[in-house]
Length: 273
Image 1 (tube, rainbow, N blue to C red):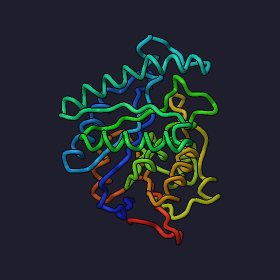
Image 2: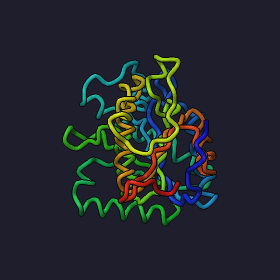
Image 3: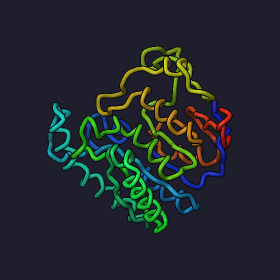
Image 4: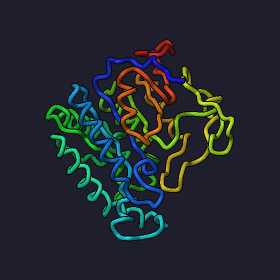
């Protein structure tokens, strides 16, 4: 059942895509999906929308570039692979977006950037300048220098803060699952999808399972937490299956085949629905 209550007055959109959605089961980048994503975002730009992409995939790209057959076993190995893979990932994005006439700008962030008001303002100014120049900001956590004290705990959380800093009208989480279910649909064939979440409470969190695939670090809990972060500041979020990134067209047209998390106003009422 589609939720057709998304506002169609979406000027600025933050789109997050995770490693499990960006890669094949082999762990290597899914170039076809990346191409469709870039084409769709470019077309949304052509329609007059402003878009920011929060993209995982640096570690996976590093694994593929070095020909490794395993995920990093230590934080240091992950940081090194991210350093190798981030440049590879940006090279791919630059080539594909460039073929559709758009320039991209890389922004790597750690949590301390947003914790410090001066650095947060600098990041916000950078976003505004890039968007004003017609570029597409591509954001990732700065895994190569991040630590337990500096990291966001995954790009689900990072995307929420990017939505806040950029004053987005909507946060879209392209996942490897169709939305939030009342139990794990991978284990329970009778699990029911929740089309609309008015308020995030203990019941909603109880629906969330553990982490997703081994290629990604985020699970449904982190997505719900991200929705809670933006909802409190008046920004709605949707979780949809990112297998076909052209699902973004449905969202722009006011439909949500996934789960829609309402924004909250001061009176706990939903915003822009």
